[in-house]
Image 1 (tube, helix red, strand yellow):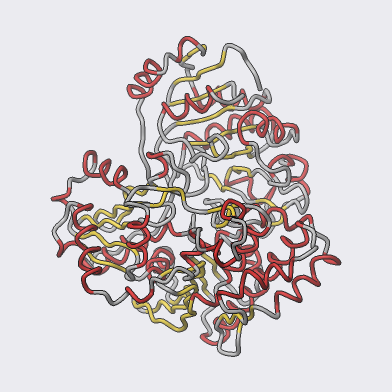
Image 2 (spheres, one colour):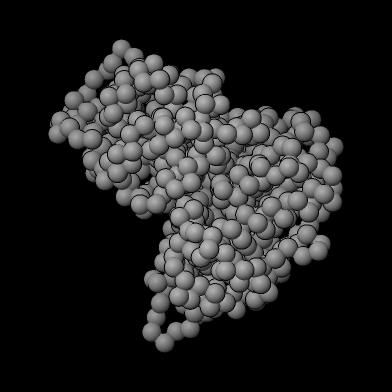
Length: 583
């Protein structure tokens, strides 16, 4: 039995489940090289059809989103892939109101400022959309179904809660199928809806609106606002939070309620933030986010008596809010869907389809995220020949490439790695990563100068051997953390050994717990580094040029190193060293 899950919104993704096990999951941006690519994922689907399972082998495809507005968004862009998100300043036109400026943007579309709701019941449009998706999938109409956006999020979360007995599943994002939040109870194999909040009350809108007002890219740079927040002082940001509390709250029934209408929201935020400093604005919206999510979760835990919590949806990409949930005394178990934004609706769609098609076949819990494409040494050799790599690099084949990488890191060299199956999701987990010694703070600036160009306040993160988690991470036993989707407070030993991989202001850590049975090669690299230094973790950041998706192929990897200050590239069995050796 083979089931596809399809997400065609921002960061379009395809997931394949075979006989109850996720065997492939990858986002379209990795192939078309458009960051956060929106549009039908043709290239990823073609890869599946050509290398894993042809169309005739597919039993069912489940497409995210039941309402028509997602299809109309594709149609608006000519059915071509495009980069989702916007800078508010890019939409500024002389003499135009804020509302008119927003109408030029994807956020304006999401906010419902572009009038499309009236088309929802247009039968001819629904038929047109179904024809488009069946044709794009190369499947007969009866093999294509659709799933509500927030149900897709919920099914991605229940994947790892099936053995809990009962679980409260929370979904929270900007908007999906005209909703922004849901609460569901998973019990006895059934999902029961407890609460739904209309998108006009969206916390996601508040956070994205704040991101835009700060001059950053809405629906992409929210993580920068979160990273900036710890620099703010409570004396200055708390009065701003007080004003925000007057706009958005949780009511007595456990639902989100926004006082301003959608048309009023951005002007109200501009009023609250006027003449306030950027870091204090970030601190205020982050405090509001953590506070309201905790209140929302606590309400439903107390109402249902269920202390096991799973969360999905783009707002839960906020790793600091997830840390607050993990620390709540009313929460016993917490599962945060890795890469919880809309890309994992593809996972939820595939899970729902698999459960419906073969209820007797349990869907296996998510383990590691190495679910994408792989490139063997023959393909690496072909890429090196095509790119004439031998003209610029000394190419070697060490006896043990993993130990060699570990030793280079111990010598304080920075190494890019493109090996094994590509990780799915927003986080680099070692196979498409830039690695460095985490004990040297200078490596932060070296990596930024060489390739990343990150904002000065943004932290890097560590990959830590499973046995070393107690040395470096407080409260780690509360939640297994292999996906870099939650922060923790660090230990004094972490501040000594991993200073370049902690938040420089509050010293929180967003770790990847590395298990040998999940990624033996990466484990061996860190183990070799530890043997040389005594440090049980490495600095790990995504392997990409600023503004680009993470690398996918050996060609991507070579091109990225060519166009950066990186000096070492490990691919499969091969090590490439630039002749004009730099960092």
